[in-house]
Image (cartoon, rainbow, N blue to C red; front, side):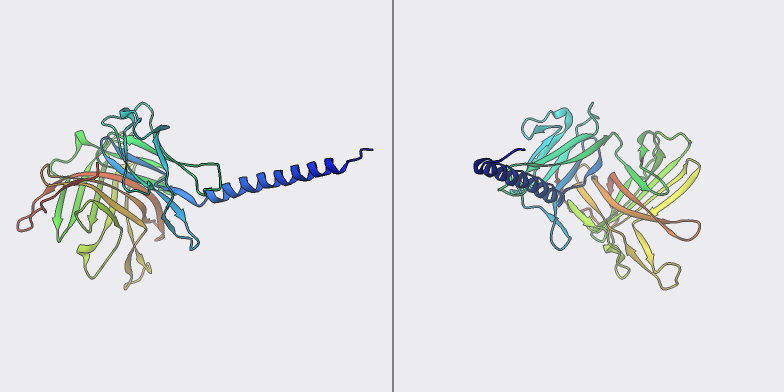
Length: 319
């Protein structure tokens, strides 16, 4: 039989309380960390192009908003100011340090994907830091898109610049916005020949992010994406960022799915526009049911003047 003195009981009680406090603290840290994320959490990026990464917070209203915490950002574990140029470049965009712009190197790095991470303390009273990571895969194609869903699972489609249709990759300024038609052959495809197409409508020409939207009353304000391919593994496909609601009715209305397109460069001197997009696109299967795929992509097009519609004189980029 073991007897405990008052002093031993006190020590046991203190140890028990300390253990509970440690477990509670760890659980609190884990619970707090789950409310934070990076947008995007993973992405593709063309060599030499840029992408914005934002630290997000899920608030009490279940809405993702830009986090207010100050974070320490790094690329492959190297902090800003000490990043190996072969891995790319990183710069902050505001004083909160909740948002950065990553620019890919001019050639694919040996360590690919590149890990962009941020560490921060969600609560000053907690000693443990939370670390979030976004993995960015660098590609050497200027135009590309990915599809990931039930019909096409996790596949990257790259336009082969050596076999693109001449004079097709143009961006036209229309009513204050942009229309792009990008066409070419598929790179790294086992079934040849195979073709690809991307059509993008953007409600603006300024560098920035444009949420996808459909406005039947004023189509020039639409921001939409249409993706297509022919002879990919013997099939043809076409996806769009809008769907008919309700489907199979004569009076249905086209509504936009969730997503956005970002212009990162609009340069009237070099006649070039660059950017990327991400969101959900849909297609209708043989049974008339909508099928959905996650997509992201990047684009580069040549600005083309239209008669009577001058290209706005601006030279802006977030590189």
